[in-house]
Length: 167
Image (cartoon, rainbow, N blue to C red; front, side, top):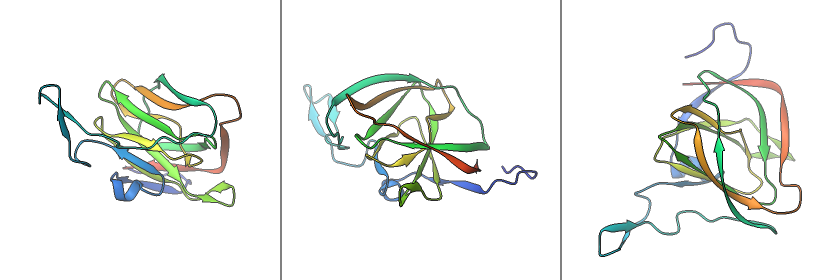
């Protein structure tokens, strides 16, 4: 779907996989590692699916309740967290956009967009440019594991020109 009257550059949503997302972080989902059986062999444990990275501070678990968005989506801001990675775990069957960009001398490069299913969590690497939480379907409720502590751990970058994210 594309807005014919739009002058914004268009970014098409890509398929989300461990390979396509590797420069930005990790995908957390069943099937990426072999499970071990626990709890009287009635539970499969998929261990060590992502590594959290923090400079100072400690890991904290928060709940984020984000408003649903629609497609096409106008992207106007990216942010990054220089002191810690950030893991988003959807709750309530939320499908969501994952928007990321590589760093280009302290500025975000051209963003990429992925669609994550309700069974895919993401761990965005420390200091990686990314869009804000953008649920498309579901409840918009996420558990977030990230760094809690002193120091400035948020850098925002307002884009000079908006991008239009489309299917």
